[in-house]
Length: 324
Image (cartoon, rainbow, N blue to C red; front, side, top):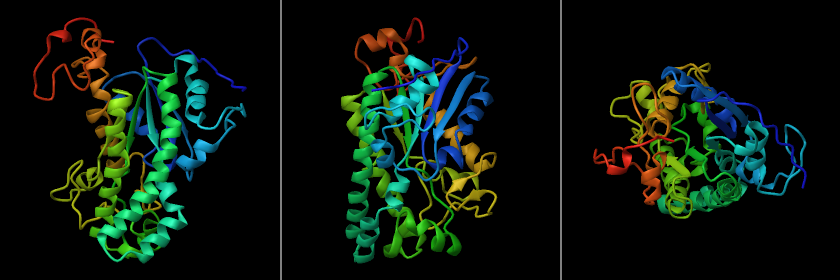
């Protein structure tokens, strides 16, 4: 196996983040929202991108040659290779992994199944079958990464509510989720999107909490773009089911499903990344991370999740001492 690893120097105190995956990383909202979120809190970050629009989890899992250096590697090692090429033997501190949507969109079996579905239960079965294929490929990429870089932490979300105008539905959106079963019905599309999150990212969260504790975080941010656009009742994790993203302007929502970097939608997504994920591990001038594994004494006791304070706002004794 041949692999080229370029150990680029990173300034002391600078956090490192690799974005890996599909068009949410390189088209919209893009990897740039990570740096924007860190910059807003005056925290130094080296944010690099290896996401490529149109790619799939299963496509990456089958690759054996670097798209950047042409170095070769075994199947399932694409994420490991990208991490080494961008950040050397230490790898990145964090990864934003964004893959799965194109696996669903490109599955003829998935769309054929939706075309035959006669009930929500049958449509959900179609989604789960296609999602399980993408999930298996995601596992093929993540698990070698977890083993190679046990200190690194991966963030994944299940995208967010898209623009669901008649034009978007007919050209893009129906290809990703509800297809012929939903037939452009917003509530149906959104309900299947929420269901997909439960059997994909949220299921990975449950699985990896046992096998790779602290290394994977799956977030449900559905509703974030709706809230940013002023849709009443919407909040991260709680979308308004009969509404779309709330902004279908062509320059704000690229190809109906990509909040454009610099818009309030994209900025809101980056803020959720910070609030729900990065802030647990990264301290600013005014705060400290909450995560147990950021404190050696807490980690030594095998504690996971939030310790300093806990989700019940209790500060554990192990929180005193150095933050790592």
